[in-house]
Image: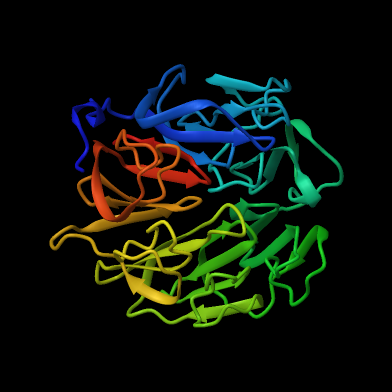
Length: 370
């Protein structure tokens, strides 16, 4: 059924919206919206949003970061550890620290930020040394053992970052998600091996990792039970493998939140969107519920020009060049944004909201209006 009247959203310019459910400590928390709802209480102009499985984050033009969602493991980064905050709180960086960008997504129950000097900051749960630091949780940001960082990404229990042209990783490695040719966990950064130079984007998911290169080639590594590597196999990859796609990739996003899901969306230079991996809830967008170890084309309507793709636990999204949001896949917690929780969708349909950016991790979705 098409979305009903309650799905309509009056979009406020430069406002932040959220929908779906944020979960933390293995529990579903109060943030539960089956349509995009405006997030109030962030002072200043928001320029970027990001998510973890349990929280959402917003970066303002002044370099401040605001967080809302679970807080029991320090995910809010304000020094306190409340069970939950539906109202954004300011992440408490040391005096004088301003943030330039937010890694997207972020590790399990943890937050990340990069300052203009290339320092990487982290806070929250820090499971299995996912923040490259011993112990945890961290209720306020700590500087991580990384310098010259230009980008980062984390999901599940591991972290990737690019430092001076080289990719490093730390944390859990039981399925090869650190890309160093082993399955040994690492508490300190280890270099990803076999990855060509020219990385322009890093992506991650539950026990999966990927990198997009400047020439449009895409490599991934890690967990592969449902064909997440896109190379026609279901064997885990301990080092990066290249995915064969019908043209240079311009943007890519990995999704997945546990061993039963995990998929990747790739936007190709000719405007087509391709997906592979888990498909049991329609998250590949090819009108099926089958997994695919090779890329399949997402069935978007003719004439729709896509500018950005994103995928969470088992739900996928695309933004058109006009800012229209399309969604498909799982919908148990309203993460399709169509006011019809529980009903999955096998092909893309529009959501009644206009966005300039979207982020999704697990069942938690945040968007920024243009």
